[in-house]
Image (cartoon, rainbow, N blue to C red; front, side, top):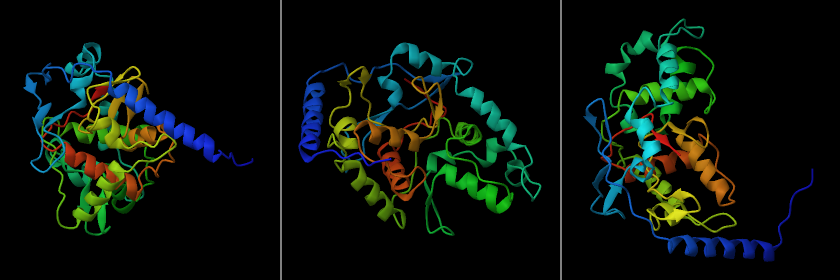
Length: 290
């Protein structure tokens, strides 16, 4: 197949169109995040916290606060939350023996409600053996390949999404608490650089939507701050759960940029930085979004 070539003139026009689109939706004001309260089975969740003193946001809001009431309602009841189908699958996988070592997750970690409590809230987390931070997906596959002697799961496979949903549920209600100092600092700084970089034919950045224009409309979408405290998240657009990196990839494709590799260092650094912007928000896994 031949390579598609876009002329410099066309590229400039596309970039200009992107800038014009930003200017257009930036002028379309909508009420900011709603005041609805997220409480499931009597447990209240922090969907609004003060921003960091040296951070760019005065207040930090969960994406749940920007969704319409119909979407919010699905998350208010675990029975109606479509992400719980995966949670149930993940619970089954937790105790399923797999691999040459004849082990399951439960063989080493026991009761997930105890051993996995708080794990999701700290991800990505520094791994000394790897010499870099690992996401929850990386950590799961490390356990599978090294301890269980089993094949790794694909990033967006039903098995991986189910396990990350099940493990994430054990941290539900706990505050996001990622580390950004020590060896994590260089990765955090790299993620920040990526977050503010203008890329793609539309010459846009993550910050252009989720920092400068949250609370406004871009077409039919009510822009949130892009917080990731609810992943893996069930999106009605996907009709299934999806990972943080899938969302990053989709955003990059939307602005006609070449996405980084899912599971690669760039998206891991970006995940760390975005998670740090939501410090203190409650983990909502599995969240529901549109």
